[in-house]
Image 1 (cartoon, rainbow, N blue to C red):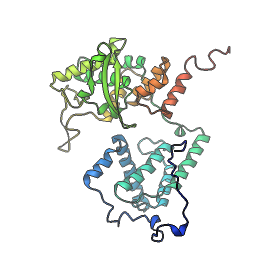
Image 2 (image 1 turned 180 degrees about the horizontal axis):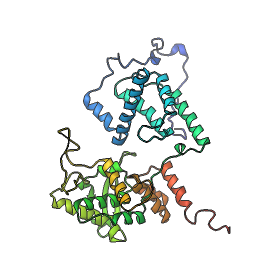
Image 3 (image 1 turned 45 degrees about the horizontal axis):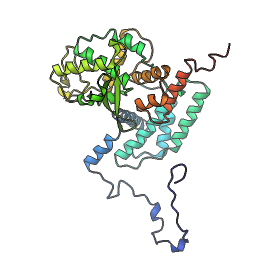
Image 4 (image 1 turned 120 degrees about the horizontal axis):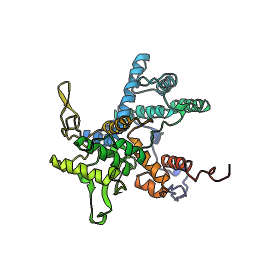
Length: 375
């Protein structure tokens, strides 16, 4: 293998006339998926493919594609199969159009996701995805224009970090005598301690939390699925230094409350209504909707974070990701080893996102080069 990991095959060079005979251009012909008799998939395979896309990503792709097809109808273009020029035209249109829900300009990263959604939805429908080089050039030019103007759209919008002091304040207004309060406290503290994404919290089951003998007096073990890395990870969650912010105590208290409701297996974080009923049915238009098991959604996790911060008047941009970012920020500020910190939180080695947290932490403490230079 080369240094870049590419496999090198050693073989004797063969003159063209000695090569096996093939039809002219046969290797270059790509069958039309629409007319190719072999271009079909059983329904269970389609489901397997869809399962390979994170739920949050799938939802965003569907929303993006719906907006794209609506635009195509407005301007008289064919949405699928899309011509490359159609995609370029649409992306160019977005550079001059505010987002309908927020009134803010589209960001380059959102445009890149929209391009990906158009290609993905074509593939899902068994249609050849359009070539998108032109559209990506539009995005590149748009990004340069925003960067030159130092526009906020060219910069990533970051969530505020929910560090321990922030969590302590948010937890002060959570009524932990109720089932919902116990759940919310466990979401905040376990989410922080595991550096979990919202979708990773929704996937936890009661069985995901164990107390093996080797962790007696140390803490609990949480088996969590890291959706970006597509790997399972056993995370050791240790006792906290204060009862109010101890993730082990909060999780145990919530599990005991669930057991009191005879819920001892299945989803860990459950839907709870305002009256404290576990897994209440939800109806829309007379039809029951929602996960029948009562498993919470990604939006519900984010609501817990946002509402708890709003209740104590915390300024900032609070989302479910605040827990993950808060863990990284707090650990690095406490001089935790960056490698151990990133692996605990399931960041891939060399993660650019995690490196950004390291750089931010370095600028806030004595590692900042301005600290001891005598100014």
